[in-house]
Every structure is written in structure tokens, then in C-alpha cells.
Length: 502
Image 1 (cartoon, rainbow, N blue to C red):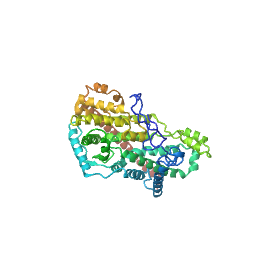
Image 2 (image 1 turned 90 degrees about the vertical axis):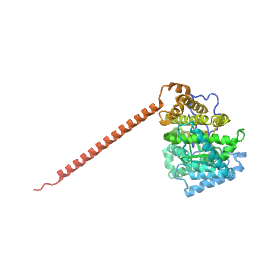
Image 3 (image 1 turned 60 degrees about the vertical axis):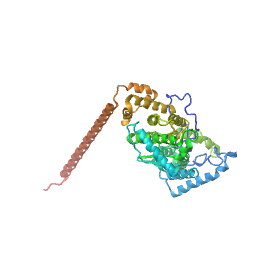
Image 4 (image 1 turned 90 degrees about the horizontal axis):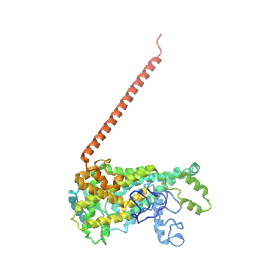
């Protein structure tokens, strides 16, 4: 299902993600750590978290003797930022220091980006407006974007920070506490107040690592929905012209064609998430459910602690690299990741199918652009990087292709209205098993009426709500009656206790 998510041990990124043998029956895997979250909260062996190449002289640093002098300035700068935030308490009241993350990310982008021009802003607005007209024919969901804007990578970082807070907080909080909970009781007592300081350093460490990761990711994203769902303000369709220009290089397609195609994808995402209100909460809820199950192997901690020789730093380093803090994936976590992968695949597949129908023959290079984006995802695009980092989930390209085929077939069989009607309730959307056989799912629903099924499901929901309300009212009446009875009983006892007059 997954290897090592946010805050746990180091990982190696595998670019060949859609390799033979990665069949649809296999479980989602989480091999990468593109944000650099390979270190534990606090100050683990291997150096200051978030520092390029680790701490001088420790494994992972470049150059002779394990130290790259060219990175010294950046290391000292980031260390100074961490210590400064620790002294001022900036953003340090949660599991991740988001103030530090934003500062590091924006500083990393300062020398890589330039200001947007009026021409770029106008091109974004025109592309989104045209895409909205084409999408009107391809989906029942009306236009949802009240504003079309051009973003710089720095704009993306600032606008997306609330989303990263929602995604990272549950996992980071559990990572920060799980390894402390796993410490032997004697070690906790010996640490005393130091544990609180370690927690603060953990927030700084995560903030530093998140900032580095966002700085890299911001230079790659093309739209506000590039990670699979909108990260910006509601009703805002955003494209990043500078990144799109770099993406267009070497595609042998006109720049305006690429811009319109990406605008159509952005607008389609916005329509779906605006008119399917349960979808965003389901996605983020799966991340939170995964986080609830994070734990560590306490017996492994005790075993390795007993083997450490305090006089030998290498023994400590070997113990830390031996999987001391690797999470134990539970069945509940596997189920949460499976739901997350399925929902992300369904969203991407629907957008792919709808945009293909909308642009049709209007864009000669549309099919080539679809294939380019598929290869981008297969080699580790922004969505893949984000979820591999936060929960250790690898999004399988075959799942995305299967979902696109399923929505295409549904559109041919039921029409646009019947296809989009499945989003009306979470119980109606296809499941992971349906993605294994898209044609079978569509064939099996030939005789079904999705509108009638929706009405039946809504009626069941109303009946369940009414039953729950009735049960609640009955319980409240019983409690009120009991309170009246108790009050009457108390009054009677007091009357009995009064002395009688002779």
C-alpha cells in the first residue's frame, strides 16, 4: 500500500512508475519523498531537517568526506531561519511551522520567477472564457469560476498554504506524537520538559522540509488543480503562465493551444468540485483517516535502544537507519488509501473525458496533449508528488486511464446528464472494483435509471435522518421526564425531613 509517508525514513524516488508487473490487482505503493520529509521531527542523525545534503560530515552530504562546501551558505541560512522562528515562536503552535514553510518556499522561488505581464494575464482570462463556452456542451455542471487569474509560483504557494495545512496537519501531528508515545516510560521521565522542546523543533523541521518541497513543486505546477483538486480560493480558476511556457517548449504545439487545453482542465476541475460538495471533504477525510492510524513499533525502539553504544556515534546512526520509526500500516489505513486513490482517479478520469469531449476537433493537438499529461503523471507529476509525500500513496497511471475510459463509456451510454448524475451521491460513484472492469460496470448498468436511483438514495437518507431525529427527540423527552421525576423526588424527601410542630 505505502512505504514511508510524511516525516518517516528516507526513500528513493522511482521514476519508472508504470512498469510491467504493476497490475491493477496490486496495492497502491508509496515509494517517494519528493518534499524531503525523510527526517524525523527534531534533530535526528543525518543532520538538520530540510538542509540540503544533511549536516556536514553526515551521510548524504556531497563532496569529499561527505560535505559539499557549495551548500554551506544555504545550510546556514536555513538553520538561522529555524532558530529565529524558534525564538520568536512564529507559526510554532502546531505540528508544522507554516510561517517558516512559506518563507523558505518564497525565498527559493525569488530568483527563479519574474513578474507577470499584462499580456499573460489577458491570455489566461481569454483562455478560461473560451474553455468555459466549450465545456457548457460537455457537462451538466455549470461554470463555477467567478474569476480567472494568472499566478506566479509565489502566488501558488501563498494561495495553497491553507490546503497544505489541512492535508499535512493530521499526518504531521501523528508522526510527531507517535514516536514519543513509543519511547519507554523511563526515557520519557528522563527527558521531562525536553519533550516539549523536541515537539517545537519538530514543527520547525517539518516547516523547513515543507518549504523546500513547495518551492520545488511551485515551479512545476501548471494550474491550481494540478495536484488533483483546487488548492486556491473557491471560485478562482488559476493558471501559471511561466510554468506553462516552459511546459510548452518542445511540444511542437502553438502556445495558445496549450493554454486553452490547460484552461479547459482547470475549469472542468472547478465545476466538479463546486457542484459536488461532498467530494473535497471525502478526499481530505481519507488523509485524516490514514493519519489516525499512524503508529510505531515500540518493541523495535526498545530493541534498538538496548543495542546503541553511546560512545559510538556510528551505532546511533545505524540504529536510526534501521527502520526504528517506520510506520505500521493497518488495514484501516490501507482502506483509507484505497478510497483516496479511487476518488483521485475518478476525478482525473472525469476531467480527462469531459475535456476530450469539449475540445473535440477544436484543438488539433488535443490528443497529443492528453498523452503528454499522462506521461507526465506516470513519471511523477505534482499530484503524484504531493500524495506520495503526505501519505506515501503512489497513484497508478493505469487507474487513471481506466477511470477515463469508464466515464467515456458512461457518457456514450447515458449521455452527459446521466454520466454526471452519478456524482450526486458518494454511494453512486464507481468503486475500485469497477475500475478493474470499466466495460463490465457500464454493461451491468444498462437497465438502471441513475436519476431514479438518486431519488431512492435521497429518500433513504431522508428516512434515516428522520429516524435519527425521532430517536433524539425521544431520548430528550426521556431525559426531561427523568429530570422532573428526580426533582419531584428531591422535593418529597425535603418535605419528609421538615420537623413537625408539637
